[in-house]
Length: 241
Ligand SMILES: [Cu+2]
Image (cartoon, rainbow, N blue to C red; front, top):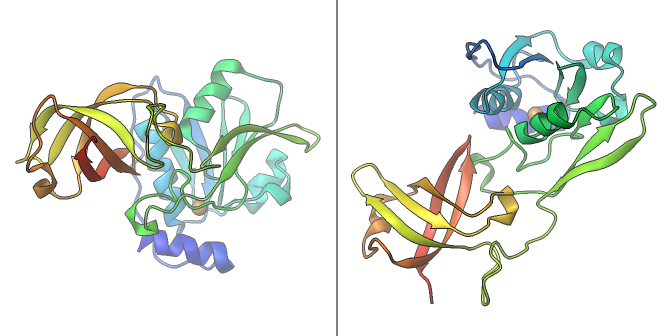
């Protein structure tokens, strides 16, 4: 329901249901202060995304229009939540990895913004959206309101691996471990461009344990996966041709 609230918020900024929120994280992690509507489900999902990436979050459930204004973020770049971390202002569903990069590189800027609420951005992703991923940009915003593109996501349906004969949307991998009782598979995979993920071996959930039937360790496979709140779920898998 939370995500549907989001869509309602985007249509008319109408609040729907309340959602709880865990705030405890490791004390050494950077703290993010977030201003948002108490009923914003996708704001809470974005906060969980930040927490999963090691940020501590302190939320103010007072709406974000006033905060956006006094923090100097242009209203035209507005989204459902406004945040402050390490002296920078963050507007909207900015990926945690871009905030980490911002804090590492520390450019002269006001902060980062993702305008409106693109489906497929962190907190606006997952099965509730049917795996839809709209293109969006993360903008680096200067104090005078000018912007430049800091990162782009989902701009093309580019092949996910540089392997000859690669299929758009499919990643190449090799089965390293099968765990049907837990519904998990460990895959060594090639680059997954749409997640900006280098080749690595990682554990995936599978949509349905029956998908693991017929697979063997060492087998080369092609698979599709979806990101759902920082977990990766394999939705389709087949032997590589
Ligand atoms: Cu939102």
